Image 1 (tube, rainbow, N blue to C red):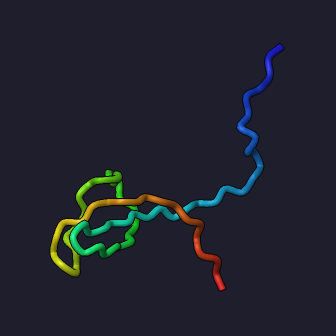
Image 2: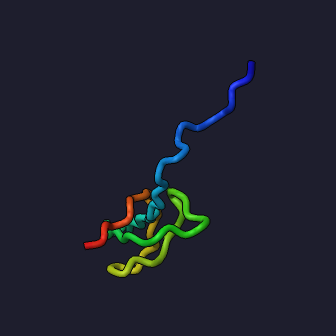
Length: 70
């Protein structure tokens, strides 16, 4: 007897999450949150720090649910 393979998630509402990248300056500690971009990974060099001009590093990539409309 063979059973159909299901994930257990059929019929549930799917929520699209917003994914963000955190860049941190190793020199001054300033953190910047921006939308995730393809190719981002932890420890990758980021943009120039807006505070001191050093190169930032990506320290965190995370997702959060969309904001609820008011």
